[in-house]
Image (cartoon, rainbow, N blue to C red; front, side, top):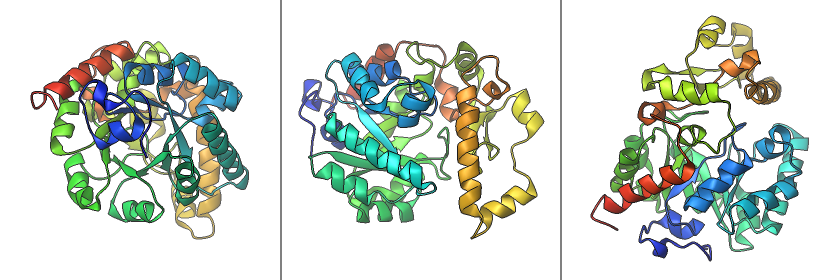
Amino acid sequence: MEADSHTAAETGIDTPLTRHAGIRVPLICGAMYPCSNPELVAAVSLAGGIGIVQPLSLTYVHGYDFREGLRHIRSLAEGAPIGFNALIEKSVKAYEDRMRAWVDIALEEGVRFFVTAMGHPRWVAEKVHAVGGVVYHDVTERRWALKALEAGVDGLITVNDRAGGHAGAKSPAALLEELADLGVPLVCAGGIGDAAEFAHILRMGYAGAQLGTRFIATTECSAHDDYKQKILDAGSDDIVLTDKLSGVPVSVIRTPWVEAVGTRSGPLARRLLRGRRTKHWMRTFYALRSLRHLKKSLNRDSAYQQYYQAGKSVQGIERIEAVSDIVRRFEEAAMARDGGS
């Protein structure tokens, strides 16, 4: 199950990811709420990687009808492949129904690369495989990887302890060692801010990399300039975990706001999040609240703009650049890592 256009053969960077996604450079622009604006998604695909559509960003934040938004992104990408992010947690029935509809529309509009997360991906894999597409699933450890493979996914996005957003607990090396025997492509997600790190993870044996923070600090991302500057100013030690946003730890940049409000929910909230009968409703409450808060974070005048999601890759990000310049530099590093590949 491989895409038909923009193949790896155009440059010689040949990995399972480039073959699966039909791209030149084994780079994924990870889906980011609220930062995945259409121009950013399309720019990564046009440059030779693949941008992933985050449907809530497209509709709730950036105001597009979903189908028309997909068509707009595809027109900007000039025929290059784009992907779709399906968060498949069953916390809210209405959301699950909407996600199923979005997946159907994405398939109708020609999307063939899907990234799933936070649930059981079998139904997505079945729909996507029926039309020759590919599904990769986010995992943080082996038990979730095994469940995803049982559901029929084609590859794994291995989210490590350097990632932004909902980070994992293990290093890139530890995850690779833990999952390498599973026989599917592994994509490194977390901690990759410069071309040297990208070349390094390819030498390690990863099939590619998923970047988020690096692509926020670009001219095409619609995040406000304060957010981008915070990324440039931060080092890896400035990334902290807070459960104030979603009820589970999220990587953000430490700011005076974050220090003032703290990074841990209160004891009652923590107890309800652990309770068998209450955790579902608490997670739903946190999810809905975080959607509102993070949407407000794009507004310079909002107090919530002090929540800047980012990963430890900030250490290697020194300037705001065009997406095409980043992808070209990463591509050159990948080609040079072993004298070409």
